[in-house]
Length: 103
Image (spheres, helix red, strand yellow):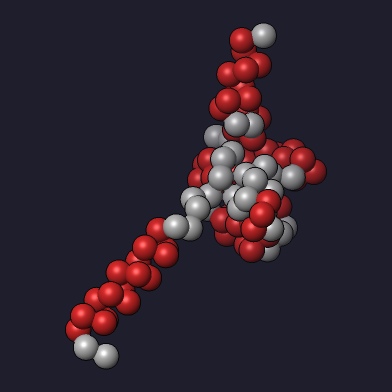
């Protein structure tokens, strides 16, 4: 492989990596506030893979950024006991909260 082929290969791979979607909201915000995927996984007794999937689109096996309802209260209780500033409104998208305020 010559230098041009290597450069083309690296550029192609770099572009493919950029196509990966960012973690979806509100899961991204909740995980960030709590200190990361491993902390949240420990807080709710789930695997890191399961917690990471909350931020994936449903088409990729995720939950479109929605944290399962049965874990929201547990996560909130754990956050309070650890002094983490997580609030109930963090579990909902900003657009939903804005729509609720307009009514």
